[in-house]
Length: 234
Figure (cartoon, rainbow, N blue to C red):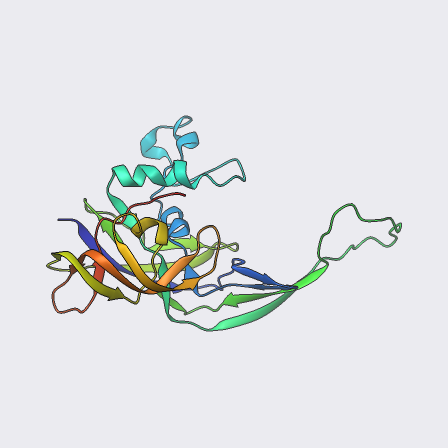
């Protein structure tokens, strides 16, 4: 039987990443993708770094290229039977910040620009003290960090985790889960009947999902977690 962790994140800094761009407004949805959480939790090893130093000294993740390699990085978690769900906001507030680029030289020769670089804009960020919730399923006990970094500003975030007791496996039945899911990770093992979509890159998420398939329940809780969730890539 796998171990189930219910994890809570509390922001100690404002959190920013561009979920959507509306003109000059760059908005952060109060949703944390499960790909991003896998990296932030240190579950993705840096293969490049391990070739340089001993494995026991390697830090969690480093990539010298600005090219996503989600399939290469996350597929090894399937072989380790580790899965991280997306995180939903338990409570959150937002703040607006304005940024601008300026040339501080006293004299600038007016020439046509070669690139379309915005001169100013606004970011809608998630404020400190906002809280998120997600789950980790693992076949082995995990030593999770107390602090992680999230988003473009590497925002300081506190992690607390509790183990859900007495998981019980249920065979194929219809159930509803209000939490966030990655549709690619459940559609191959469960029948998804209805859902709401949260549009965000690199894979849009779903919530308020009604599905048919195997799931787990827990002692003194109405929580249901789908079984056989694995990282899949289209």
